[in-house]
Image 1 (cartoon, one colour):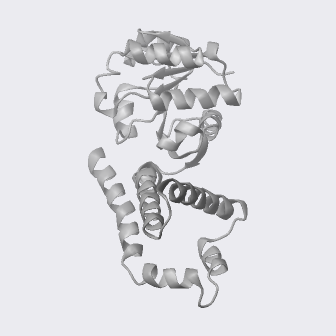
Image 2: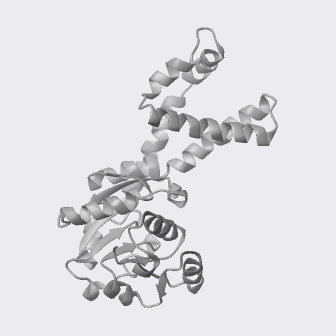
Image 3: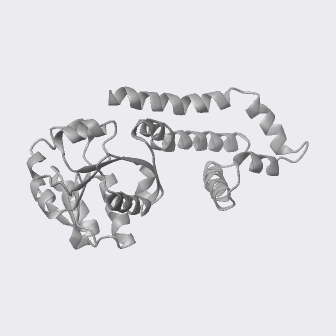
Length: 265
């Protein structure tokens, strides 16, 4: 069991706490949460039965692992009074979008790992990238991997690649949701009722992702499998592949990644 503290107790923190407890990495008694919002603290302790406090230094003293889960615009003000409370063996995990390791280390001298999660963490299906500072020992890095993977999938990258993670999986749920929205609209235009089109579109997206993952199949192989000569899929593909959709989708991810770099400067 790990003693884990959260500075910030919003939806993302609650999702991570839920995964941590479900995985057995820590129990409610080993998790303590801080927030400036009493409403957020009340909600998280009622839902997950964790310990709560309105005193941020208490989180530091009672925890070996601390998650920075407040709004990134509140950095560094939210941690300026905590520097003296950081121990050398503290493992600090930051999910503050755009806040670089170099900035974090100016205020927090512990071992820091920077994480880019996504909103699918809310249902235990997170796709995240993480980058450790140079002083993070292997044992602590393995702890972070275990915690993050309890909430979905996490891959280690260099810090300069976290902007790409932001563009792909951080912003990705919005882009995928847009595609699903357009699939639903297409189904409705073809004659289906909205709810039927929505159900079929959602299952098609989730089923396709699961098939590719379970069969370890390259996307192009599945495309060929579904495309019977002169069939319906080939007819649809002619529209899709003769459009600018390939470059538009790539440019969408690239622009989100570029914006992440801009915000982090």
